[in-house]
Amino acid sequence: MYAAEDYFWGWVVYVSGAICLLYTAWYLLRNLRFASIRHVFLILSSVFLLTPVPAYIDDHHLAPAFFVSLYEGLVANPATGFQRGAAPIVALMTFSLFIYVMVRLVFWQINKRRSSH
Image (cartoon, rainbow, N blue to C red):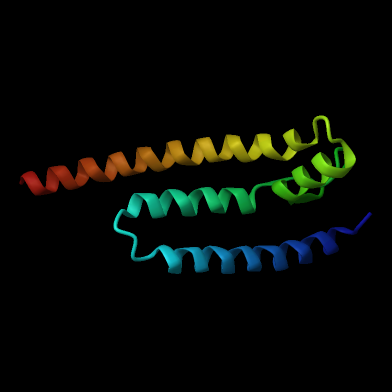
């Protein structure tokens, strides 16, 4: 088992890499005509990369959910392993898309009212 400090520095390096990947994705998609497609892609990518779950079932240290899902699905428990990491990812993707749609609707209403005055 690793110490809490090892997990902390692992997360620092991992999040730095994820931010670089997300910046690259934003840079490649910045000229996309439809901003909402770019936003949805970046939100889903962020959730996929940054969703944490406990590294082990009986441990409180966190690890990226898709790595845990891959490890448990391919090595530790092939029958049900993918579910432990995939379920939080899918739930957070659904929740984040719902929040995104609600925010877009609020801004659309605000812009609609401003343009009518």
